[in-house]
Image (cartoon, rainbow, N blue to C red; front, side):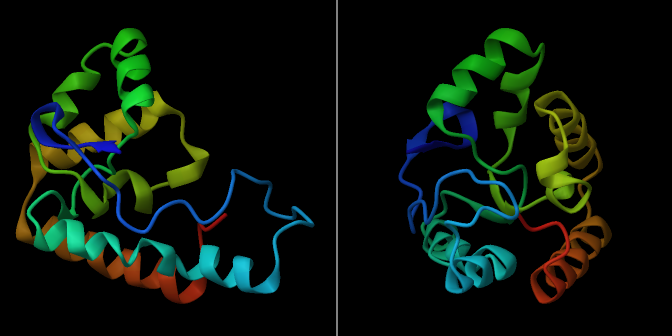
Length: 138
């Protein structure tokens, strides 16, 4: 389960393909590296988009336990639930895994406050670059 707009829970389709691991973890196979690099494990979430639970672009959804924890320790975190979560977002193309939750929240708020077709296009173009090059992938 993940948390969407207005704190509504919904299933994250596609599931988790691996546990958190270092970039050079020997347990990750070549196929696993390819899946992580291209992020094709996120494709089932397109169904979440079609069901209206997610958008293509928006802050990435969080698991309920992280939402509760972050809301307790990061002032204003709950406000990121004002918009539908997305497959990709401003935080993901600007550091993603290398950012702290506070930094990601700041980037999410930038997106929420500055949403526009031009910003969405910029996010889509950079996301395609990340998928094709593996830049920023774990």
